[in-house]
Image (tube, one colour):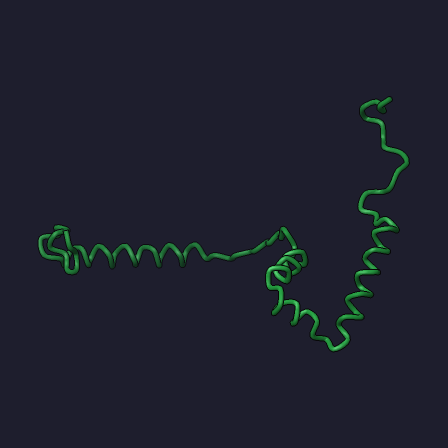
Length: 110
């Protein structure tokens, strides 16, 4: 019989806990790695001999998701002055072009 909605979960393992069996497997893998890596070059040999396997190993080590927060301070007054100067410069360049028509702009092929 299922527990009624809203009832707290009781019993069982707590979320995120590591099982003893998982720990023993991880320990066995680590011991094997240490015995194969006596010269410190095991991963280099693995990467050279089996690049696909090494890439899979590296992919397991890299976090699958990252949260990045940035803060940017912008001086709006300065940014607006810079934008206005660019608009004035562009308008001046347009005014200096012969006839102001796109076909007569230098470097423009129609």
